[in-house]
Image (cartoon, rainbow, N blue to C red):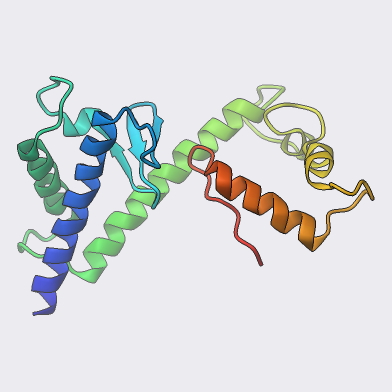
Length: 179
């Protein structure tokens, strides 16, 4: 029974995620709470789906058949022992592999954007400067310190978080949560 529920849940999740791509694509991502990133569509929960992978025949549209085929491929990839079921260990392994790939991509992009001397490493100064150069902590202080006392109060931080939440997440970064 537990396996049936797990498989049904995984299939529903995969289909819901792939359906979101089709809906977002048909609406040009406008007002859908999705962010297009280099052929990927990121839903509000952070699941990344590649439009080009789903559009198997490259006709610029995703059909129900293409969504089902993609879901089947994802299930088969997770079913490491090919027994027709995905257990907790297989699911965790798949999730870990996906998280590792995202971390590798994100860290490579971070080095590329912030490595001012192009030595393939980030110094403390490069980290503090951030991708825009200068002092990112001073920039943050200037934006968030609304009373100009040179410090950020809890109220100022909460107000900034509310503004960030209203604006929505930037790229693959989650909205900061209050302590």
